[in-house]
Image 1 (cartoon, rainbow, N blue to C red):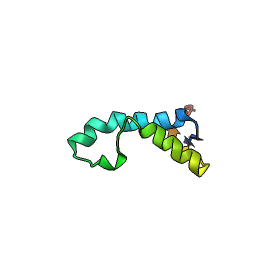
Image 2 (tube, rainbow, N blue to C red; image 1 turned 60 degrees about the vertical axis):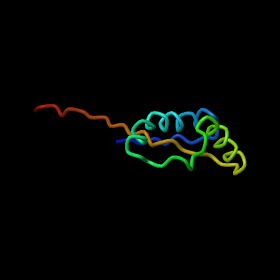
Image 3 (cartoon, rainbow, N blue to C red; image 1 turned 135 degrees about the vertical axis):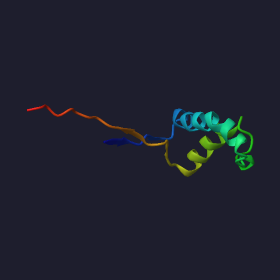
Length: 75
């Protein structure tokens, strides 16, 4: 098993995070998950980027896990 965690401060990293959030919005609304604290989702990307720049840091996206299997030879 192998796990990669992408780190960065570029807008592309923020876009991945926001893409996941946007894909989960219908489920969050259905389950009544409170998202008001996030503010206007149209400006969330810029606000996150501003926070990353102000903190001079990087953020991560969800870990990517991969598995490689080999079938044992009969013998």
